[in-house]
Image (cartoon, rainbow, N blue to C red; front, side):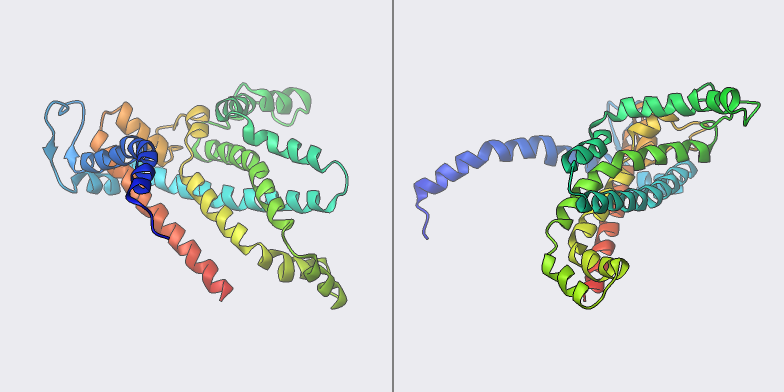
Length: 293
């Protein structure tokens, strides 16, 4: 079908507001950030920036604090992503198998998802604080410990608490995604598996999982991106302490930009993480395609 010139103008005018908003609030900040990453952009040089090429990128890669934050982000992602997916899939399987109160169960498990990250983080911090609820229970109720445990005052304790929060918050989202996928699996496949004498485990690995492979890939990619974008829970629970040992890439970038004033450094860091996430997404897609083949 041929489109008249009048229709083309009408289409262009209809698209123009959206394109302008996308360009001003999305494309321009990205391009500006890319330019900043090649300049010495900090509080001292805010009046006139000096072009320094890839020096910001070199500084980020060689920075020991960034290396620690990057490792923390990887560990957080490696723990929370499988945890969320496994528990979310398990809950989805259980809800899909029941005949009553499905809506109630879905609402119950989805409540943590819509709970504010700030509120949830403050609750977890209160529970695991040195003078918090957990230590009170262990010392004064069950008398397991004589002194309060400093859960949040070391690297692994703080990260573990943040991981627990991340998994708890993500179960409901995965449950909804996997439940929708399970309801699209053809019943004929299960009937054929029953005829062949397949048990529950065999049907899970031969029918259910292959049928929802696309959903698994979608959840894996989205959760991996989310794992590297963790910020609020770390900021509220540990604040990167002690000595930035619990920082992740976003909290470290926030610190370097708004506390240290190293905007060029932070811009370079953001693009490094973008490239890392893009590479991880490509690897995940390729692995899933090979399995399909």
